Image (cartoon, rainbow, N blue to C red; front, side, top):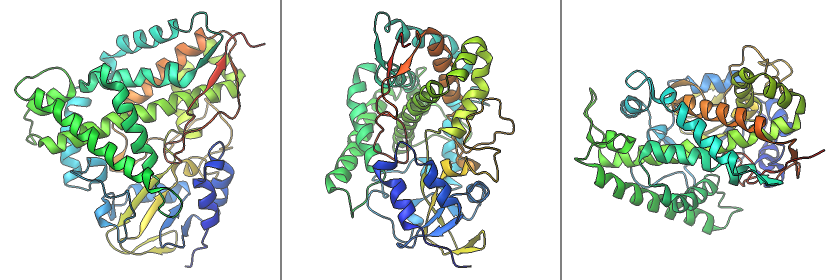
Length: 406
């Protein structure tokens, strides 16, 4: 089967001018579930095909298996386990999960409930007397950053430094050598080096000094799978630091924006606090923090929806398009917190399912549940708000809200 090429549709999705509303373009992509691009890569945009790829053991997450990796794909140093395949992926994920959640530390998230609620309350207290707030800078960013710093054992006073590093890293993810200045890539490479060096320094202080933070546990605990090397610990901490706050910032901010666009749902949430659980699941489908998995590669030729994808070809998975596929979800462009059978792709799927998902869910539930009950008649200052540059991790860079709006 010959696929229809859709380079213009993908180009428009990646262009910043479409950041505020890429969903009509995702609908165009879904007309060709597996579309070969001019550079030989393949874009997959429908739910069933994306899900099949994410569960296909013949697919690789390791960029070293790409025939023609582009600039920015090959990270220096030891890769994080998210960019590895079994058996290395499975071993490192088990070692990380041993200290991050069930079965070895099943009470991690529930044990943080009080601290999470207090942190949110303190941020909301600072809104007193303010007519205008920025949901990002005043709330959605400082909350998960405080949480992940606490978990990893990163001093909070160092936050401004890694904020800059993370921004440069995220901006370099979608580097295009044909349209972007090389400075964008260079800043991402340097940020990756600086962040790894910084985390390596913290790790050195943990050896022989067990503590409650994740860096200490990874540095000093020997489990059934042994112990991570220092390079593997730094790569894991780097992943958690970025994924542990960048995606949660977007989830909370996208959530508040969606609620302000659906005031009847916002009012329901104020009156029905338990609605927040299915509401966050619907947000993960309707306005997810991660829109694209930029690459997968096949170990050998594979066939997807009748299309042959050759060994080593880059495969781009459009998660947000799949989560609005009308062949999987009824009325997919409607925000419906009462939706049933909501098996979205917001945290991916398969062996790389986001293992920080339970924490991110609870952070978003507590943050949105408290925020809507404490804001006084909130209204958007601008709609659409200004967005971050990245089409991969999509969310507003600022979300200004006025209190006391009519």
